[in-house]
Image (tube, rainbow, N blue to C red; front, side, top):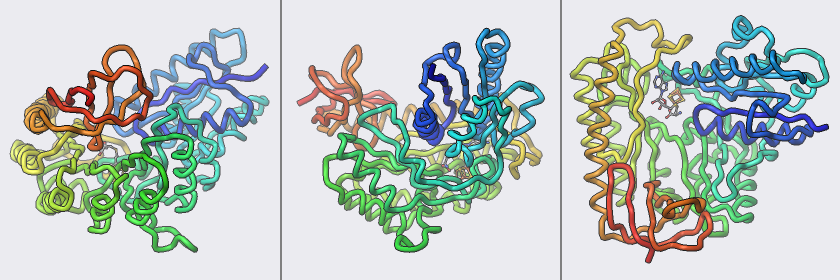
Length: 439
Ligand code: SAH
Ligand code: SF4
């Protein structure tokens, strides 16, 4: 009988992508995916380690797998992939001595052979550190959604922000071949995909390491090429680093009809002292110059961001500067996080820790502002007409998102397919969403 596997995915879109890729890889090896670990022969957790809470969740999932392995009458295998696997490696055996697989992100494309070896009874496999590069494997990806796709353009990160584990967990930045990306998107849109999300830790530095025929191609060139492909589809891209926003990129978004006018541009803090300590390589003033340029060149563009509160040494004044920058940039939306010290990063040893309560308070202040400004901005859309791409039909009113990624509730649509675009007259606004009626 075919062996089965289960994957629980934590963390960012990159991990979601990797799980879809691992699914394709393991299915090629003859395994089939099941939706509960109690049904599986091989249980995997695709882990995140960007904040401690995420790491804890992955560890507790491993605890469940370990118990299941011990109690099950059949032979069960379990393991961990993703960022925590890379970061903790063999140390995980201390708590989970009977684990069968530990593989960091750089080794996931070879998972087929590792899993076959484990299932053949050859013992545990531990793979961390530098991996074997093979972008061809990405063609095996088994996507869960048939209208919206994530397409990796680069992996790893060279930025080394002082708080962040990503460069350690995912290694140096590496661009996927230009032609492979374009080929994949052409195939996806040919099969009816309506939304393409280009994915990288910092998409703006895409191409710097390309050689041969693609040498000199950058992210703007990629956007232009994708925009020129036939078909009716929307393109989004995540994430942009503010230190690398050339005018050519803004121009490519401005002129590309299929490219959504949305920049996810994590700022992290509005205080120059904190930005310096974070190694972000821009000041609050320089950041605002970029947002102003974007808004001038692309009227109606949305700008979303990430903030961290409670970085070591952050004062009330620093928080005030973050709130001030939030107002000045008029962010459309934001992800806000409490600083979580990560072992191995440069900030880990910094003194002047901010207490848990103060972090909580500062997060609340930022979220309150986010809510107030979100409502103010969203109210301006009442009475206007927006194109909305509908999500999969479900119970209740239709849902979807417009080009700036604002969530919508849409009345007046009956029979529809996911990915369909409808014109919607906005009738109501909330801090994080809009509602309207289909015309
Ligand atoms: N490469 C992307 C995203 C990386 S992680 C980028 O640079 O934008 C996503 C977000 O998690 C970051 O933008 C940051 O706001 C947050 N983050 C990263 N490390 C963190 C830490 N140690 N504590 C709290 N938040 C963190
Ligand atoms: Fe982490 Fe900074 Fe790289 Fe983003 S750019 S992944 S925050 S090191």
